[in-house]
Image (tube, rainbow, N blue to C red; front, side, top):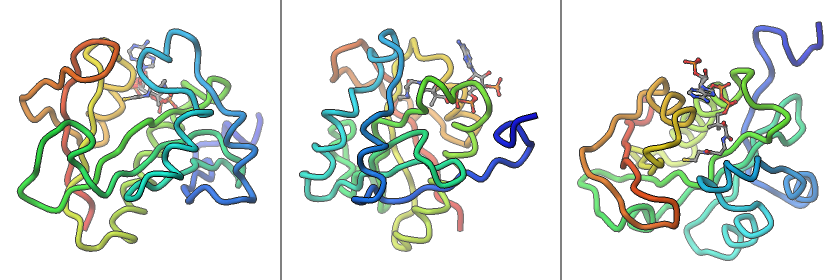
Length: 169
Ligand SMILES: CC(C)(COP(=O)(O)OP(=O)(O)OC[C@H]1O[C@@H](n2cnc3c(N)ncnc32)[C@H](O)[C@@H]1OP(=O)(O)O)[C@@H](O)C(=O)NCCC(=O)NCCS
């Protein structure tokens, strides 16, 4: 069995820096999944350029297999404000070659713990997910995200649930 298929793969998250940037730019998803997430060639430079955005890599045994970005201004997620200090999660994906092995689930747990550690004043994480994106909905619900009840109609691929989850203490 490959070491990547062992029950406890070494999944970590890290800010994208010069050492891993080129490898992160090689990551991608299928054409159909681009309805739900932008291309890394656009999203990485955008996150690097935006004040309040953190470009993050998902690492398996130290090698990038996925990406997401954190927004410290959560209003940019769904044009709404929150009563508690809230961070936004956007553009979360696992590269096509690594999907369906439970790595997205582990990466999300690692991301939440990383946020709790690096942003101690933050209490919640918000994201939007397309109503048609069943795998992502399953992933987020399993991680503890719940629909807020509102739908977000921004974006190019149809309505999205707005989901919220408390950070671990
Ligand atoms: C969503 C995504 C990150 C999940 O990553 P992953 O590593 O494949 O996820 P996991 O293997 O940890 O598990 C995902 C869950 O979705 C389920 N799933 C997978 N394909 C599915 C499908 N076609 N329909 C319904 N559920 C599906 C899996 O069964 C699993 O749930 P389970 O453990 O209850 O069975 C990945 O599919 C992806 O990058 N998609 C494209 C980008 C995207 O849509 N990002 C979300 C933007 S909001």
